[in-house]
Amino acid sequence: MAHQAHSYHMVDPSPWPIFGAAAALLTTSGLIMWFHYSSTTLLTMGLLSMLLVMLQWWRDVVRESTFQGHHTPTVQKGLRYGMILFITSEAFFFLGFFWAFFHSSLAPTPELGGQWPPTGVKPLNPLEVPLLNTAILLASGVTVTWAHHSITEGNRKQAIHALTLTILLGFYFTALQAMEYHEASFSIADSVYGSTFFVATGFHGLHVIIGSSFLTVCLLRLIKFHFTPNHHFGFEAAAWYWHFVDIIWLFLYMSMYWWGSC
Amino acid sequence: MYYKFNGFTQRLVGAAASTAYNPQGLKPIVSTESPALVFGTTTKLASDLPATDSFLGKNQVPDLQKLFQSDSKADGLPVHLKRGVPDKLLYRTTMALTIGGTIYCLVALYMASQPRSQK
Image 1 (cartoon, chains in turn yellow, red):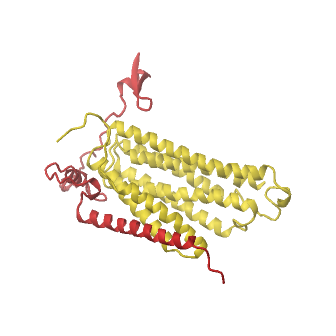
Image 2 (cartoon, chains in turn green, cyan):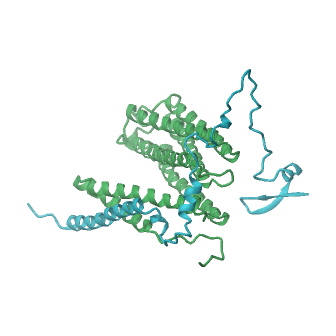
């Protein structure tokens, strides 16, 4: 059998990239069919196939790394670059929504009553649930760091406890945000205030759910002995993503909740 | 002058003696063995039980590594089909959904692109 003379990973042929592209087609055209023709069939097929592709693609990455040993230090370096670049792109994504917020709030138009918050809008009190949410996410940043240290020290039981706590804090944040959305006196339709607030915090909430899912997968892998004290990049990537989500919340809190409510 | 390897920049950088004598990745071994229990009568220790870490399941990674690295099997199967039947089922379901869905999508888009009949 031929052996490679380099430290990179030449993957087996895989159907997931093209199936993933097809899933994206079904999801986007499914949105069109839902918006314009009130049919959800295509959208459901799209989301379902997207879920199946993600599950199998990432399952294969775990197989290639943990079970087949293809993730050399060179491969891991590439994955680190990749995750950092992806998180950077997400930062730019949020930058756009912050730009929109400051564009509208720094120079409120006459239609808004020349003030921010606009006339008639009663913003959420930043010192109530939003402050609790800030504390929750900061605490979860501490617990995920605790989990990381436990992994590097080979303490599996403590790592499981710390990571579980991190995930529970994430769920607590999501539940409180959902309740806030329900209780808010304004909606997304309430002028540009509602638009900027709900789109920015809504996308943030989606990222919290994504991050919580990533951490949950890491917890399952941790329980199944996939991580070693020296090699646990999947966990590190999840922890980076989680810290990013935390930082975005801090900016949201300071700009939209606090400054934007005065 | 002591040096250590910076994993992020992949270069040697200056370090203190304390870092040099405790290289990255190694920590002083702290004994986690509990001291011998002393009771009036002989006691049965937990360490006398079969040595499987029963906290949330035992380690199946070595078995799975054997399964996926089967040079002996040499089945030539790609990694997404390596486990046999369950992999095949999931793959075919995904393929049916995506290919069937794409055809349905093209039909739906063709129909949506037709001008509405005047009423």
